[in-house]
Image: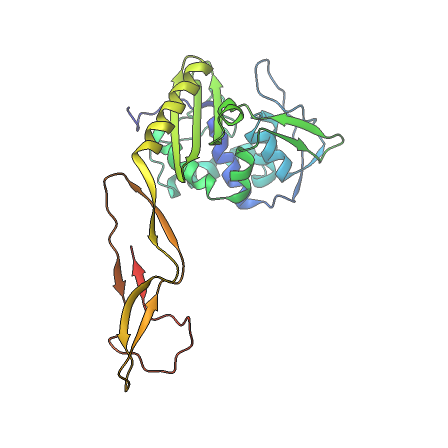
Amino acid sequence: RNPSGERSIASTTKMMTALLSIEHARPSDVFRVASYNISPGESTAGLRAGEKMRVADLLRALMLPSANEAAVTLAIGVAGSQARFVRMMNQRARQLGLRHTHYGNPIGLDIGSNHSSARDLAKLAQVLRANAFLRSTMNMRRATLHSGPVGRVVVNRNSLVQEVGWVNGVKTGHTAKAGYVLVASGTRNGVPVISAVLGEPDEGLRNSDSLALLRYAAARYHRVLVTRKGRVMARVPLAYRDTKVALVASRTTRRVIRRGEKTTITLVGVPKKLDGPLPRGSRQGTIVV
C-alpha cells in the first residue's frame, strides 16, 4: 500500500548510517565516542563521551539497541562532522536510486527533512544485507561490546528476531511523528524476503503486520533446482573421431522464482565441434537460466 509515500522513518535512518560507516571505515578502526546529550526517551547504549570504541561495536550498538550516541560517533568519525555526513547520506541515497528519501540527521530524529518510503527502505535493506558483517549483526538477539572500559551487553529491539526463528533483520524505529516503524527480513524455505511498515500505532501491530507481509511474500515464491552438478547438458562431436564428448553442468544451481513461473535453460557459446586434447573440467559454454 502506497509504497512510494514519503513518511518520517525514525531510527530506520540508521540503516544509511550503518551503510556509510561500513563503506568508509573498517570494523577494527577505533573512534572516540562523541559528546551527545541524550534526551529522555532517546535510545542509548550507555556509551560515555571520550571512550575508545571499535567501529564493529559502534555498529552493534547502532543496529541492535539503536543507540543515538553511536550514530553521532560514527557520523563524526567517518566524515568529521554530522553536517558533512548528512551530505554523504543524501549523495549515497541518490546513487542507490532512492528517489523518495532525504536525510536531515544520522539518527532519525524528527528534525529537518528526514523521510523515506517503504519501497526505498526495502531497497536499502537489500544493500545492507549484501554485507556479511551487517547481515550477521542485524540477526543477533544480543551482543557483547568488548571495546570501551567495560563489556556491555546490548539487546536487539527487533522483537521478531527474538521470537521468530526465520526472521533475521533489519531495523526498528520510533518517534512521535513517525509512529512505530520496522524494516524486517527473513528467509523461509530458502526464500529471502523483506518488508517495511511505517506509521504503526504500537509495537504489536508493527510486528503482526510485518510478519503477515513476510509470510505473504515467502508463500508466493519457492526455491527450485535449476541444474545439478554433472548433469549432461549437451554432447558435442570430437573432431577427427567418431565420438561425442559430454558437456556437463559444473555445479548445482538453485534459484528463487515466483510460484507458477517456469525456468528456461539455454546453452550459449557451445562449439559445434571440439578439437582435443582437452582437460576434464575445461569450460566449453555457458548455461543461461
